[in-house]
Image 1: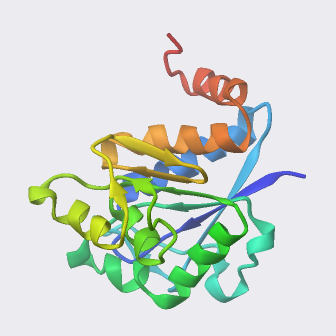
Image 2: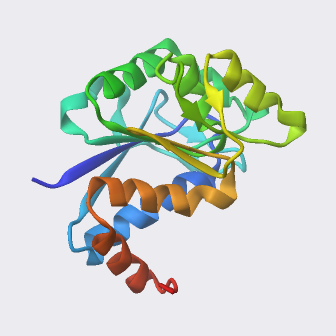
Length: 197
């Protein structure tokens, strides 16, 4: 059975951070040894990203069944564009808890780690997030009881966190590797014309 990733898009999400998931998993369907499907969702019927791209999620939020998915992906975004209105919504926090309770993978980029922290599933675990602005976002993550590491990418059991847009592809490929294997990742990288040295 084909594995599936649920990509949650908040209002004000960072388009590049979302696009790495749609591209990597799209390429996995096109040329992967083991293809993985990706479905988008959100709390709104249309969502405006930080840079004003408008998207329509495929799956209405109230139709999500956690059992249908193997992983949850969370791109970051900007607070002044409404990111935390959706990212901190209790409905979404409950979804994060359900994915974690079921041992499913959760991958985030940049401040996408903050709703995971707020949901309580990173308490006493290792993670990272956006590190600029005098470390304000890292302090917020620490305030949720998280051990914040000064690393670009952190994997703590089933949860992947990272520092910012530059880590986006690393997160998407790490999630794909954890869902399948490194041979599948390398085949997709080869087809996408990444250097494998």
